[in-house]
Image (cartoon, rainbow, N blue to C red; front, side, top):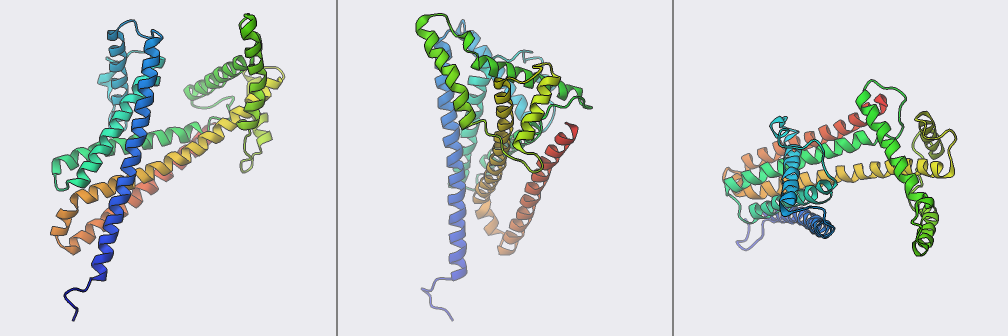
Length: 340
């Protein structure tokens, strides 16, 4: 027999776990709202700067660019599910810089804040099926889009060494164009001969362009030693690629620095890939916890056995999804490395 005022340890543990899950889901959605808000504020700041610089001739031009950005984001969200070719007729062939710098981040940040707000709403007011359904759809689009970004980063991380020939000619052309364009921009950034001839500015510009290589080399352009490939071999492979693309016959000092920065950039891409993968897993768990909080009263009404069965099935499904995504990312990297 137990006393009437005694606390059931099993029930107490279950309540503590539920509260922990609620707090974890709330923390994930708070980070999503915070991230979206910061990006949105930065987008408004950039929008104001471009407007003051006369980027758009009229508000109609600005609205047209915003509409193009919305269609671009919509196509990106639809791409994992089906080919939205009906949007191609609305999209222009050339995407301006202000689209990527202002409107695309702003629209995606609004979607992120909207989804996270729905997550808080379904946790605070559960058992509203329509709201939970809308949140689930938005969260699914967000998670699938994150997977697309992760896979794109995984493939891009294999582009360090530019091959001389490959079966995928389009990919090879893109790699060569990226290598040439980034080299041209890098050399132009360090060329103090391009400084303005004004006596007041030429001294400042020349000093900046002479000091910048030292700062860049010490702070960023330090490639890592990868398994089976040292940083020196990676830089030498880059120099061979530049010679094959007729960018130089023998590498100059700026070319050697560029190759170090080129390799270090892909080290940063690999780190970004790991963080993107981790953020996707955390976001997935946060979404599932929010959905669970929304449907928990309904599950409890079905009895403890049904409750445990649903949780078990969901847990196995989540583990399978995470495993599938991780394996898919590794396969993308391996296939990209083999193709290169």
